[in-house]
Length: 378
Ligand SMILES: *Cc1c(COP(=O)(O)O)cnc(C)c1O
Image 1 (tube, rainbow, N blue to C red):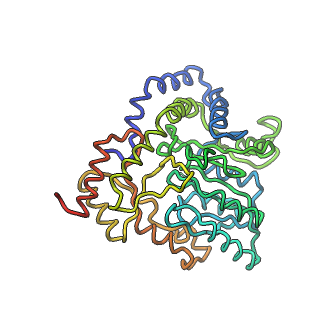
Image 2: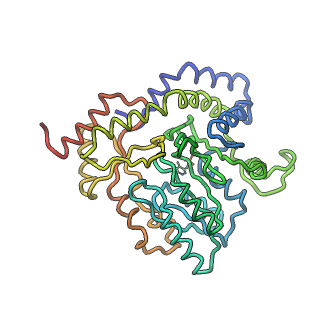
Image 3: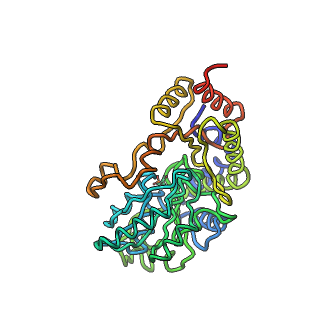
């Protein structure tokens, strides 16, 4: 059993993907081929925003957003404590200060209440200007942008949606990657919509921000490539990846997103009352980048993981360490007492095999082994 089965997906889409890749190689338009702009149009239309600017990876997408907002040294950027490292790394990289915020224990996403407390603390301290909140759509579930927006509006924060895991998710029919003043995603192979290498995209309704993003991603270009008006980066999505993504987006829209939700429902039905299954609030829809259960203690989690491994069932721990405990952030001098939920989740979460091609008998094998772990062999 694969944790995320990219091989089966390729087998299903092989004819179309091979054709798309060969076309790029035949034309040799490897950088900035027409497929890139076509994909950007398709993505913007799917998400329901005015502009999509593709780039080299999901981390650069976040960095480009911070560049376009001129985020600087004296700025505080609020980041959930329970997320992938990149969500906070980009803040330090641009020279600003990440301020970590505890998450909700049920949705795993940033807690609006903890966010407000963190903003008040920064204001009282007076050294930094509260500027941006990064909402991460962890494991495919959009963060609670209705609540985040209330806090953001009250304190004048910009919202940056890190939708690296959230592509395809929804709140009341509105698509993920449309909730931020700027939103981003990643096309890393294992993400909900993945390419065959690195890739990412930035989404915005703002025409000026779109122009800035397009400039920053190609060495701060002005009217043309050899007219450079600002210090930028080199962060383009290459044409082969764009061609592959167009094929994959079609499958994603037509059946993959539905199928992965069917897998999630089956897992939840079989595991109800056995372990704590993912909580999807009313009106929310997840793209299930991960299916993550919560156990009662670290010991139970670790023992269950070992039991499943012994039965050839792969699982992962996303994430074993809170952001504020990462060595790279030692310089921020966190003590840890404000992050009760994150600390507990790092010890108790376990992500199960999850992808749209998971078959019923595989799901049953996983859930049966979990029941066997708790109740013994019947
Ligand atoms: C994967 C991921 C990123 C980074 O994306 P890359 O394409 O790997 O650079 C950023 N944030 C979150 C939450 C992610 O899961």
